Image 1: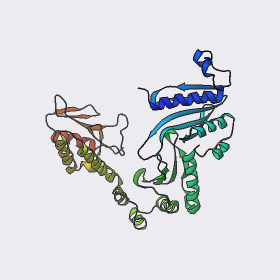
Image 2: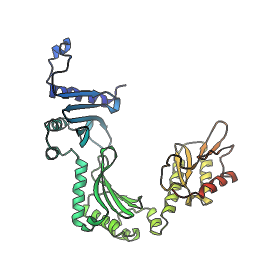
Image 3: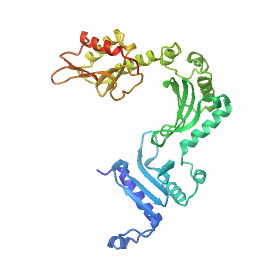
Image 4: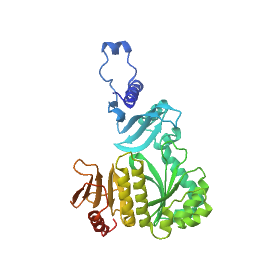
Length: 361
């Protein structure tokens, strides 16, 4: 089955050839008389790879890579292709642009291959590095109203994965990460304590958000104080744990809440037994000492400080509904146990007490 993205890429590839190599006579093309590439210092290629299809156009050290995405979302009136262009010099990405406008995409490519500067590209095409420039403007506005933030350890727009950017304000163990998500009109603001997400918000009141960032990052105000001044924000349960000095314990407890909610939403025969097992382990106090998570339907417990295990990091996993057993318990150290019932027992407790002695990592 041919994907829409592949069709869009083929169409744009043809438009690039028409634009930069000149349109071919349709009769000559039909007769096969113009099959060779025209003499040109511009090379144009198409990579047909389903949803990852893309076009590349290159002139000397300058290059553009264009990915075509299919936009069909309930929250957007527009339906059709979106063009994501990367502007390159000497194989190094310089800027990116995402737009629904086919002609604007073509015009920006022309400008780039004509050796226009990045500043000239910015002045003519608002979609080029749009989110990055939005964050730079936001940074300037926040710093102007809150000059104390200019003295902290990090105050910058930073390149992240997948050609995206985030605006960071960091001061010791407090930080705020600001980033643009999808087609949302306002950036998202993530407030962290010791690199752990405590609360998040998003609105257009930059002055008020700048005040919140200043108090959270520079003055290190406590959540209980900020709740009074910013009643519209949900600071969440984890904020109370961190304020009381029990941040790690709070992270672990909330991981068990998330695990329990995950299994509650599953439509599986063994759900009551699994939920009872989780309940019994929590009652034994493991919710305060072990991180709970899951990999597909497998329950995983560890001493990991944060979600996501490193390679070879110790953990204990509980898998259910095996052919020869109802519950299989494994550890990274090589233990493998099989049980006819999903239940908490002395053997399970022994394994959990052993891993409980390991350091939080």
